[in-house]
Amino acid sequence: MDTREFDIIVYGATGYTGRLVAEHFVREYGASDSGTKWAMAGRNEDKLAAVRAEIGASPVTPMIVADAEDPASLEAMCRRAKVVISTVGPYQLYADALVEACVKTGTDYADLCGEPAWMAEKIAEHHTAAQESGARICFSSGFDSIPFDLGVLMLQKEAKERHGSPAPRVKGRVRAMKGTFSGGTAASLGATMKAAVKNPAVVGVLRDPFALTPGFEGPDQPSGMVPHYEEDLGKWAAPFVMAAINTKNVHRTNFLRGHPYGTDFRYDEMVLTSPGDAGKAAADALVQMVKNPFGSKPPKLGEGPTKEERENGFYDVVFVGEWPDGKTMRYAVKGKFDPGYGSTSRMLGETAMALLDSDAEGGVGTPGSFLGEALVDRLRQHAHLSFEVEN
Image (cartoon, rainbow, N blue to C red; front, top):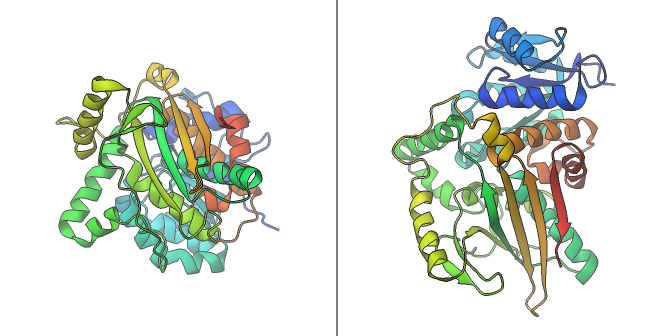
């Protein structure tokens, strides 16, 4: 029986996203001593106390001082919790010691990482050790890549029930989205680009759709980088800035679950614009945005959308399954709130809650591989996401 002091620790609770995650626990689960035992962690106790008061958390909500530059403090923190949530990125700069501590202590871990080269490195370093200790290391537990990872998983479940086989080809298409980037997202991309300059092998990882499935390489994948008109959806499709991480996580879920989508599975993601010349022009413009998503003035670390922007945001993603005989199926995932922060903070919190109830084996995985439908149920109940078949 696990007798750890806390169910969940939110590490980085004084940062932009960490604060939103803590607010989610206050809103959904109340005081730390009323059911789920959760705590706030960060480098500075005074700042933790200030955030605790500002978000309306109980004054008895525990606070833990831990620092990414002090591995001993991280290990001590991990030994007190069943799950540690980390919002302290870029992860390739600040998360090595924390992941190592979680693996060592058998503590589950969830973060918002969208840094595939670092993730591939952690898989190589820690997957076997995490299996042995029982730690579930769950990367990409926000907008990258939960709606996409779980959207494909749910489409394939429905496909098997309706048609007797998974769809060998799935298209992920963002039909609508309203939201903004934060400084944390910009910092992560900047750190990845700097790593690629220092180590050209990183570029190969970024380009490889199977970079997170060591020992397995599937069929050639659609690039998703060339704008084109999609007759079945009646709109132009353009490159999607997050496809490089999402597609890798979808393939890793398939890999870790024993290829329920098939070893011949092909998948890509794009953004839909509109019909006609205006749609083509918008698609062409998005090619340039993917190359430089933040323009000449990226947001600063710690910045993000306002409360009004978060609450007015939304997203709508459709997944189209296709079979060689012409059958098709559509499955939609929709979310309320700004995708990158208002919704992401809720998704990250519910990933941690789902890990508490999971009996999945340890390792370095994905929300889809560890949690699957159990997380879908929690997101429907607590995070304002919908998952449903469209035809």
